[in-house]
Amino acid sequence: MSRTPKPSTRLSAEQKIQVVMAVLAGEVSMSEAARRHGVAQPTVVKWRTLFVEGGRRAVLEERLPGRVTGESTAERRMRIENEQLKLALAEATVQLRIWQKGAEHIREVPS
Image 1 (cartoon, helix red, strand yellow):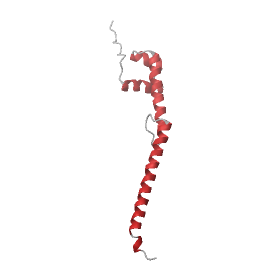
Image 2 (cartoon, helix red, strand yellow):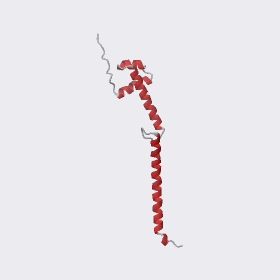
Image 3 (cartoon, one colour):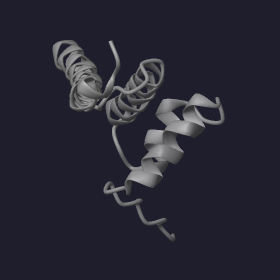
Image 4 (cartoon, one colour):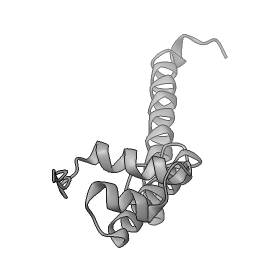
């Protein structure tokens, strides 16, 4: 009687994704996927949960343009304010230079 070797319980990340995709597509049940790959059903449940949660985070971050991964709301607000202050400083610097150039030529302007 020939035994089929039990699959390794150490699956690569890509293999785990394929298992989860098959479960989500309804191709196999979670218990069947667990049996085929030699892992416990709660392990497949955990992979599915992590996969779905990662996708949810990616979709949420996509709706917030310019957001840095792992950035809190306060950090994002400060980063945006910092960018606005840099622009305001640049505009003020340009205005000051224009006034300085104008002041150099004030004596040339007839009154």
